[in-house]
Length: 88
Image (cartoon, rainbow, N blue to C red; front, side):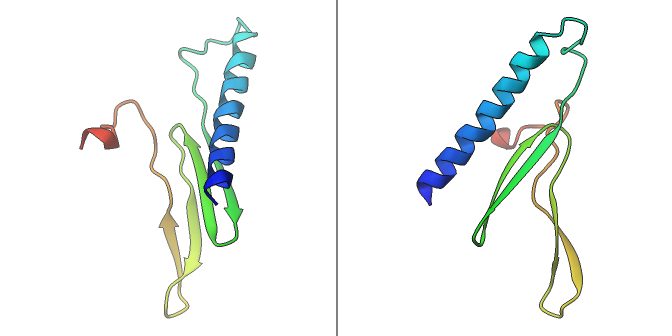
């Protein structure tokens, strides 16, 4: 499983770098003031691997022990004005 996680991480990073290079090919797009969001989710058996960039979030609709529908937030928004999780 560790190798799968590493491969997925590398794939997420590579896709982001490719998109960054593509944007630089279009000088008419103001990348500094523009924004990009992406949430990528891969299910491997019972595991979910999530890649998240920008102010978007992944949510999961599931059922609780009483079979009621509930929503579980899987990611947090990544916004420049929010404190980093690393600083807490």
